Amino acid sequence: MHEQNTQSSFDFASRTMHPKSSRFGKETLFFAILPDPEARQACLEIQARLQREHDGLLSPMAPERLHISLYGVASAEKIKDEMIFAACQAASAVDACRFDLSFDHVASFRTASRNAIVLSGNGGRELLRQLHIQIGIEMHAIGCDPHVKADFQPHATLFYADERVAKTTLAAPVVMPAREFVLLHKRPGEPNYEHVESWPLSERG
Image (cartoon, rainbow, N blue to C red; front, side, top):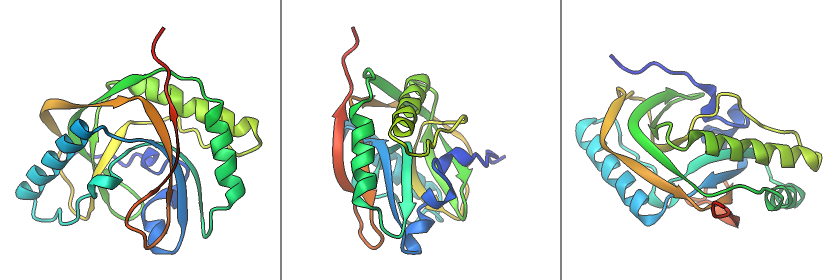
């Protein structure tokens, strides 16, 4: 039986954060954790295996676009420089420690228009959730609406597809070290995200 989940947290700020928005001319601005080279390679190998097993998975997420969603800042026809500056200001005030994320299964989640085929797991979830909340607090402190989600679930999207994939446990978990978080700017028609800025996470005391 396929895993049934319609979790809205995969559109963190709102449904306008879904990739569908870009096809309608909207830009998106969001914070994320990027995988290190080892974790990125593991994602590519899982994508390749899933494509061999499922004919409907035709368009994998490109390697340079793989990320762990952290906090959706805005979606608009044009992201204003003031919003980018505000997001950077808020991020600079965040004080959080390094941690590792661990993804132990593949699952399908229904988004606004298609299925997201993702890596998911609870390893490091609480620390990622705390970072998500801290960003929301700092955004609120400078006068922006906070986009904090109570049902925050770590994930890395591998595909968007019409097909669903049953929940499958991985032979070995994919570990993604979180040593910094980044602000990404997605513009319609551009294949890659603009890496606006990054902020290091502190070492544990």
